[in-house]
Length: 207
Image 1 (cartoon, rainbow, N blue to C red):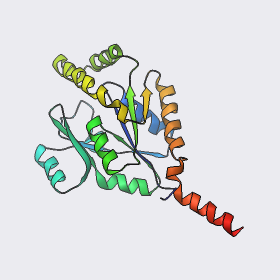
Image 2 (image 1 turned 30 degrees about the horizontal axis):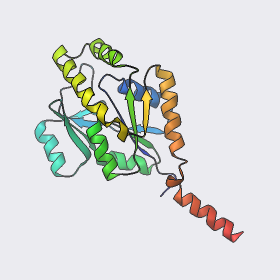
Image 3 (image 1 turned 45 degrees about the horizontal axis):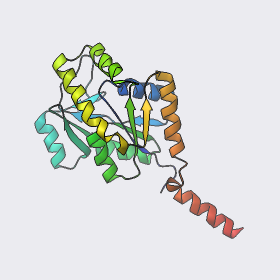
């Protein structure tokens, strides 16, 4: 494996856990990350720009991407498709960037199945009460949608054990530092350094 190649990272979490804010701060603080932009069929929220927060697609456009194998993964969540375009991710990894996919748990497990060395991180608020307060506080969704997201969180909580690390998003700056440390430590895992180990072994034998 190329030691200079970036790491593929999946960040998931309950809706309202603050993943978007966390990712934005991580990219502002450190320059070795690239955030993959997902495609979705949901409608843009106020202020969201096509190609920045998401690639906003019609159902027909999205299903064409599925048929042409242009997605690393995709899933349907609260009646909308979400998926990760493949080309951008692979280009950034080869350029040495650590690429973050902000996707839900169903998609995360599909990525791990295709790319077993993917690092999986799950973001959660410190409590369920805090989660609901954040969802209500966003002011972007009806109470029916919020209740749907809370029910979905119950289901998602059953799959958290599949992740490598649990990131508690209580204090933003502390959380950003913790996530950066976890990711950078992953670069030094023996399983990711095979090429370097072989080089050192060869040099030792020559000496």
